[in-house]
Length: 288
Image 1 (cartoon, helix red, strand yellow):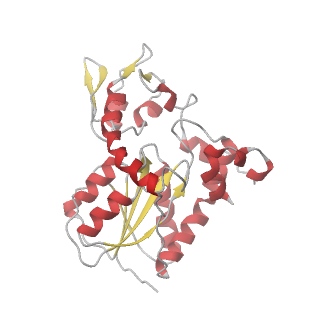
Image 2: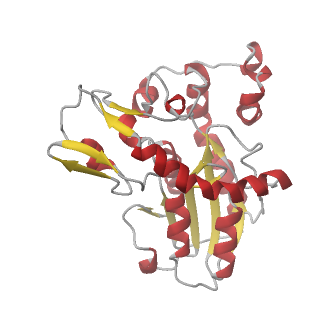
């Protein structure tokens, strides 16, 4: 039975889902009488990490691998010979192809630095990219989150090792995912404000990579976008639109906090054609 005295929970969250997972994890640890420290990778210097007994890294999955902000932070970590690490990728599609190899790059970096990766498990949250699974499924995912995090904590503390089983094709796709950096940059640079823009500067303030600069009261977008979509969904007047790949942006936006306020009703995915859609196979399996 593991009894870590110092636990650090490190997360990056584009539109709130990964942060929600991290906070839920912290709450479940508190219920077990374990204290933890939470850090946001956007503002934390990895070289200043005080080596914990257990480090848990939470990151969204972008382009078949963990967010570039997460990988950059891991690369900056000091060497260690005792810290145990659990990696928790957060996806809207689940632990299926092409996501099965998403942790490989991060795991390799950690091992080279002497960290002991002991656990990996994916958490599924409402999708903010491309297609919305619908209100019922999204509420079901939020309702199941405490149960899933409790299971993970039990696994880690009892010493159960669990890793994502990467498929050969997904290993290749994860390598291609490096191209996300270029693709995301082009996507970000294509975003333009419409006439509805109120010049509030909120998008510039919230950008995790400082990719948005205010010039003469108007936001201007550079090439350091990481495709988190935070600026688009956070805009209070919905004034930001990309000129390329606009289909990845949900038409009705993405509002996690509003979704959390909605009444939950028990919902059985097997009662609908949801689990017949291969695009949602990972979500359906996750909810079983």
